[in-house]
Amino acid sequence: ISLFNQHFVKTGVVEKDMGGLIADAKELREKGDYELYRASEEVAKEQLDKAGQFVKAIEKVLAKED
Image (cartoon, rainbow, N blue to C red; front, side, top):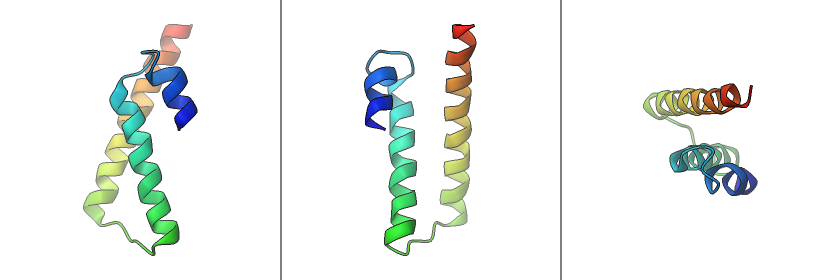
């Protein structure tokens, strides 16, 4: 995540909030792994939506590279 932020967020290749999306998802995953946290359906749907936003942002970057 730090390398993604360093090479893509700080350089302006992707918007700053994309780095936050990854960090939030990682935090929730780790919570589930180590704290016996179980995400609600609402949280899971939010994460799916955010993942879709992230994928679209990366697809835009990749399309510019062609």
